[in-house]
Image 1 (cartoon, one colour):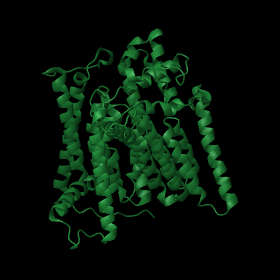
Image 2 (cartoon, one colour):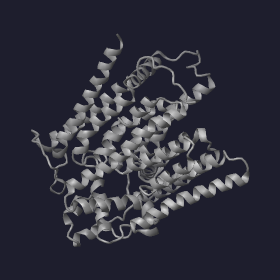
Image 3 (cartoon, helix red, strand yellow):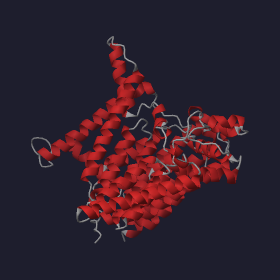
Image 4 (cartoon, one colour):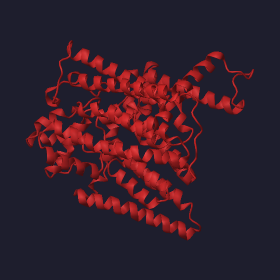
Length: 509
């Protein structure tokens, strides 16, 4: 008797999410209308671009609401239905225009540079103006027209193939880029439940957290970002390692690094974790040697086949993101805020210099924490340590774009406990409102002090909750009873996200 109403709830939330995705796809072309990026359909929207932009935001809100509502029924929906719902939500934005970013056009421009026989690690897209591809250059964000490629050789090689197939047809090119990113989505759909099962977590909850997340649907597929392909390959590699195939896992993580370099951390963590399982120093050294050879063979093969050789191991992989100044990036925000405060009291400080210092300090701190985690990693902690480090690297890097969170989210979502984190849910919702449909950050740099205040407040709440839980045996204030308001908010949040009485997780044997 209870199954039918719950099933109806699942499909009701699924229909609501589909309505949100359709609204985004219908209003999207008008919201980002420009001659260089004209889409193959442009429905008439009363009120013009302003109204279309509002409709896109309404669609985002509806999609987020549907996602949160579906989260209450993820376990009873089951993996197969969740994948079906995800496919329905993804289809409209896959066929829609490039929203929230122009990076898909940058990918095509860099692929065109390679297709024309130039080296995209040395030659920026601006060269296309004199090579008969001015229409493509016009679609690239002006900020990235004079920047060399920051991506791996596998991805650029695939972009070159796409350019060879589509020629000057930008719409077809963007659709094929999306098709490539959907391969990453397919990897997530296959391997995330396996990761969750291997770790004793809820596979349906993991799929809901990632595959149906507004972060993936909007900031990855609608925007066409290649991070989802890297994340899918990385997830597959870690899952294979946990299932007893570490060399294959290392090879896949190395392949992921030829899309974007952060995946190389997966090679190191799998190698060290599995080397610790070997008995004796000689066996450990042999395994590490096999790991290095496996990763080196993949990296070398891709470098040769792409025709780029080792030129991709260049400063452009690291320097390009550092050109961006975002209010939501902690190192930039802190540097900008502190410089403003010092200037207010009469101390002349260059904000950019201070931001560079903070960026260097955050990079060193991330490296130290990464080394500490690498030293301590074991097989059973591989996913949470690696996922946590990648989340930290995304936030502490020179440019904390929201879609970078996918690097670690695909791993953390499969870890018991972590997949019940309200923070992951909150970040997935808030992040999709940070980027305007035209790809510009909604928060200008002068808002950095307010953003940093929010970060400090959240850190304080986290520290207080952790300290209170450890010091009082997970009790509330001094009288041992949590305030009624706190209990109410917490219980409502858990009921919303966990659903009615989830059954206990069964650990894999």
